[in-house]
Image (cartoon, rainbow, N blue to C red; front, side, top):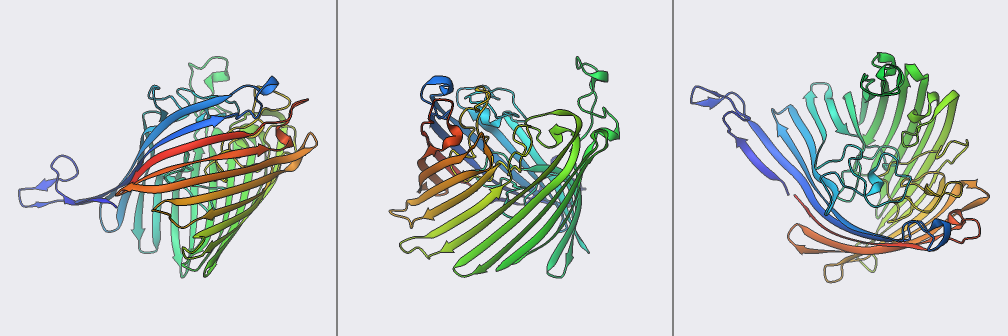
Amino acid sequence: MMMRFNRMCLMMAGMIWVGAERPLFAVEAVLRGHYRVEADALFELDTHRAGAGDLTPTQAYWKQRLRLEPSLFVSPQVTVHSQLDLLDNVLAGESNEGQQNIYADRPDQLGTISTGIGPFESLNVRRAWIEATLPRGRLLAGRMGTHWGLGIVENSGDTTEALFGDTVDRLGFEWQLGPMSLMPAIDKLREATRDPALPNTPFGELEPGGASNAGDLTRYSLRLFHDGELHGYGLLFTWSRQHATNTDLFLEDFFARVTIAPVTLWAEFAFTQGSTDFYAMLDPQHPYFSATPVDTSQNAYHFRAEIDFGKRLIDSMVFDIGYASGDRQTIPFNGFRYSRDFDLALLLFNMPLGVDRNDNSLVATPNFVTNAHYFRALINLPPINKMALCFNLLHALTAERISGKNSYGWEVDLFGRVPIASQLWASLGGGVLFPGAIFDLAGETADPAYGLRGSLTTTW
């Protein structure tokens, strides 16, 4: 439901009057958003109750987020959109910046609270962009969300459950070519900056190339797609370039969707290749400076089948099978990395888990899908006394063996969701990870990790 302020006439704020008869322009505003309170209780994320891996026996906390998405319809052709988060997943009882460690720039360590990490503060202005409908297409400019296909590579994170959301500074134009859309775009991923106050860096450079254009990281993209009611498909090509680090990274992603009632089938294939002297271009969470060029060639695929049973014994089922290529070099986490908002379960590939067998201060698996073969079955049951139940089963293996091991194990989740008032829902559930050999340490077999999650959510 949307709050709509029809033709608001505001002096000094949104409307200028000519004389006393009529406005020079009128703005229609629409406010969308949601508010979410979420509590987690997580146990044995290190997958070891005792010994070298006994790092985090229990974590319990609750957090909240108020998301506002105002849109201003300046004219029939021009709209200005924005997205603001207040108390953006800030932990209860903490300062305006206290968050769970999963939000850190390097979520490779187990911990409950970090402060001042990333862009998250009590007020986070995430996005602001303009859309203009022109005779030959649609112009987009500004900081906006980006999404493609199933969301394994680009995921806008616009659901109430998403934690991150992929956002870019983009200038693009979408042409309508009959049933197809063609969209070339330029994304500014990093602007080279210079700060003379920074110690121990030549000329105060924040990154290679200093303040020159050679240090800019720019991505050029071309999207060709069709999004119909019964079928859709698209091809995405991107080229990321930074001259100062000899960085050239390429991505090709193809997706297709078809609905033959009651089944909807999805497929997405993604490929990356390229080289760089500055490994942070490949993995910003684990910066690495190489004396010689680092080459990468990774790939991923994901298949999905959605079956709608029409609220009989089973409401619907979703089956996912996928793959993300793994570590082919000695640099940590060098593999295809899914978007962090593409979640398959409560714990595995969603929370940092386990203990790295070579460094017990690091985790064994990150909070995103990488180096994995996986299968997931999701079953939605018809509402019982207005409560909808969801059962989730996930099994995963490594794409490349780690120290001769290849099993991540099995996870089972169960969640329920019930409306408790108009536009207000409560959910409660939990999951158990039965870890595979990947989480074992020398002389120690991994123990199960498990967690509980409850939330209250309202949307408008």
